[in-house]
Length: 525
Image 1 (cartoon, rainbow, N blue to C red):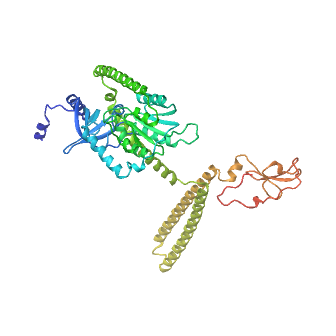
Image 2: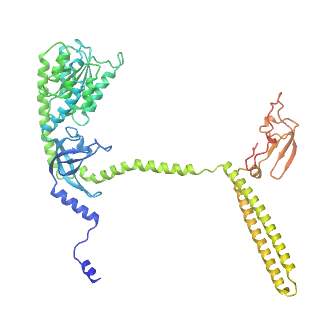
């Protein structure tokens, strides 16, 4: 005992679980506030319903949990994919709810062009094996189209180049389907645009284009990654309308370039291919647009750099809401299952409760029959036992003389009398209890308004004609007809002093002749 007391005496500080978790969180965030981690994406299933993405970064020896918040996800230049090797920039933090550490990613980029190129080559090989790039599938372009559909950003310089070039070479109707040409939603929006142009009916309020131009300005491999989407390549290959791909510059190649019917080196080149006339003015406008776009981009980048430097001193909303967001996501994932389980349990409990008037009446009738049967059996058994005891007593009295046992006989007779009295009292108590249960069931039946007598006790009356049939409407009463009024305590006779006399009174069944079944509810009218 002394050894235990000596071991418990120490000057080491005690921490709660929350305190040690928060201290560990601060230590990790201070030591690894800005890190770059290279690894392979594992367990990526796309963004959560809240917009955040949860996955892991791994190599051949370790695994690191990772999270990308919704605001950061929308700024990524390409969509993360399972098995892709990337370089993640962010900070390490801990999640006290499960004693795990993770990296909150602020920027994500491929681990060199080799990783993306390997993924692109694998997609290209698989789609080529299916025949999506077969030249026999290519469609011829119309020589003089009347309507051209353009899929691109409505605010970029690409659409202006195409529209001006077409207007100068060969004026015609141009339909623009606005999409994002960069980011996470780029591939889905361009796919929907191609399918939407194909779905337009001939002769409808919106003219159906004769060909489609999918256009986007130049950029890096990450900027153009949305146009390497497999679903987009399949939609372009399955298009009933001829498609011209004008994504990036002449040196930029994407899967959509291989799946389209014609590839243009530039968006301006696509306009020149679509219409049969050339003009130098469109090239000059394209050059000015590129210079303007570069100037605006540089100015915007300088202002963004200054703003980023000023905002580093302030905590971001993502940092403040990191833990509440994680708790909310976990609660959301459990809520659906909890509601389903609770609904099933309550439905099962409700289905187990089956209390109807017919069931209650049947149970009362069965209880009454059981009580009558038990009472008859008990009374017969009592009489048989009493008869047998008297016979035994008489036989015993005949074998002995009264003189020696006079006193003993008197005591026995007194004991027998006392036994008979207790037995009578016990039977009376049992009968009273059974009668009380029967009265209680009768009152319950009346309370539930299952008895016509209970309704008559409330002040209602039943009107019968001379044949005993129930009269339900005043139109059925004949002037001078004899009526019978049934009340709770009896019946009274009456004569109708007024009423309608129809020419032919319809015949009806004498429902009053049929008495309600025992325990059932009779008609009120």
